[in-house]
Every structure is written in structure tokens, then in C-alpha cells.
Amino acid sequence: MRIDRLRLINFRTYADQTIEFSDGINVITGKNAQGKTNLLEAVHYLTGGFSFRTVSDREMISFGEDAAELTASINGNGRDQTIQISFGAGRKKRTIVNGVRLKSVSELAGKFTAVLFCPDDLAIIQSAPAYRRRLLDGCLCQMRPRYAAVLSEYRRLYEGKARILKDRDERMRPLLEEYSEGMCRTGAVLIHYRARISELLAQIAEETHRDFSGGAEKLTVEYRTVGTVTDPQAQSTAVYEQLLAHMTGHREAEWAAGRCLSGVHKDDLLISVNGRDARRYASQGQARTAAISLKMAEREILKRDTGEYPVLLLDDVLSELDPMRQDYILNRSGTGQVLITCCEEQAVAEKTGGRILRVADGTVTEAG
Image (cartoon, rainbow, N blue to C red; front, side, top):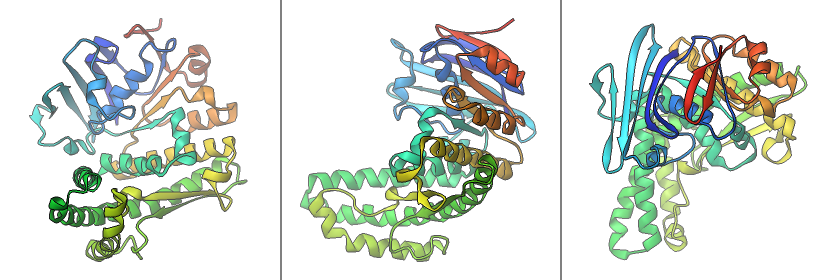
């Protein structure tokens, strides 16, 4: 998988810019606030039509403009393809692949795959469950169009139910049951996918972490979902019944609390290092190693699924790592296309032999 060319119109700091990438390592340099991360955001946006920095497309449109557009020439599944995404205030997002408009952005799944690693990914280890769910959802949405569609439907149902519970309008209670049933139905599908990918993630991340730490540490990953679900990998019909029983049991408590207390929106991964909860007890070094191991495992999962490595996006992470961890990432990322943002271009270029692209005021130029 690779991206050969990207044109950005009114995207963040880019008014109208076309960037060409090499099929190996691309070192993207420049001072802070010049547009390096914006460029990686644009590349990552092509994987599923969502940003890793904001939930609002409007924030990605250049100041003073009404719409933005991304057009990419990629090579995936052994053939050249074109992806075009445009969005703006008051208009529906338009996604076109090879000249054909997609019905839903979820249909982008598998067309272009990428794995992002940035300093904020330490939150996967150290912060709230939402960051760990995002790891699962981000990977699955790139692999399975059905998952992306069901996840979108679950979120719609959750938001509807949350509004009713917040208002506590008795006239809306019949609709509340409809939302709850829909959340159980879609939640059973999400659990089916999450349980299976968590098992694969655990296996690959454990192997990677053992190699990374020189055999000194053992990383374990366990999927946690609604308590009544006895076997997350069971048939969806059985999981649905267990979810429904749990949600029914919390019906009055939810009404009293004014919020959703049951559902897969509370799923989590229990990540441990040497048998101890990494969120509570891992050192900064252990947390970084664990986060890298999980991201490298995500990359391997996508490779196994599609037959080719996804594009690896490294957003200013090398400066946060010691030389050993830097070398590990660079050595493991040698296969496939890599985009690295950094401030110290010479040191990284010497280590990688990569092509240098310089960013200043939203303009990209090639070094040399």
C-alpha cells in the first residue's frame, strides 16, 4: 500500500498544494505550526473519512473558506486508484473512488490503509478506555465496511438514547426501548468483531513486546465488555440476548441517573506488563514500549488482512524516544511506505536514507 500523490485544497494550512511521495521513507520536516501534522492528518483521513485530531470536519477547512477537498493517487491491491473526498459547511460529505461516488464513507474500508503513531498514543496505555476502543475501531473500520457501518449506527442510537435520558420526558419512554434494543442488536455485532481482533492483537503485541524488551517483559491484552456476556466470541444471537438482559436490568437505574449505564460504548482492553495493570503501574518507558508494540501489532494485522503493509505515519514520535526505541521502530518499518514528521531532518535522514520534504507556511518543497 502506498500514496503517490496528494492534492489538498483549503485543508487546514494548505490552500492548494500537491505533494508527491516516494515509495520508501519520507522525512517531513519544518518548524512547529507549519503544517507537518496537518499533512499526516490528511493522509490518515483517506482511510475512513475521519480525523484523528477532531470530530468536526469543519475544523479542517482553511480559515475563511467554505469547503475543503482531498484528492489522492494511491496504489493498493496491486493497482493504481484515485480517492477524492470533499466536505463543507451545510453540505454532505462526498467520497469518490475511481470516479464512482460511494453511498457511504464506510465503503472506504480497505481502499487505503495506514497506521498512525503519535505522542498522544501513550494515552492508549495510561488514559481512559475511549483511547483503547479507538485503537480497535480504527483498525476494524479500515478492514471491514460492515463494522464501520454498524459502529456509525450504534453511535446514532446511543446519542438518541442519551438525549432522551437527559431530558427524562415520560412521553419518550417507548422510543427509549426502541433505542435500547437497537443498541443491543448493533452492539452484538461490534462485540463479535472486537473480540476476535483483540485476540489477534494480544498475540502479535505480546511477541513484538517480548522482542522489543529483549525478553525482559511480557505484555498481555484482554478484551473486556458488558458483564453478562459470558463468551464475546459466541454467536451474535446469544450475545444479543445477554446484552438485552443487562440493559433491561439497568433500565430504571439509567432513568434515575439520566445517562446510559449499559452498552459496548464502555468496552475496554486490560493491558498488563509482567502481570500488572499497565495503566496504573507501568513506568513511562514501559508505557512507550507497550504503545509501540500495540501499534506495530495493528500494522501487522492490516498487513495479514490485505496482503500488503499499510502506510506507516510517525508524527513527531522519534524525539520522544530513546535511541534504542528509535532504532527499533525504524528497523521494523523498513518494509513499506513511511511518512515521518520531525524537526531534526539531518539525523533522521541519515538513519533512514529517506527523502526529505520541507514544510513552511503550508507549502511543501523537496530538499536538494
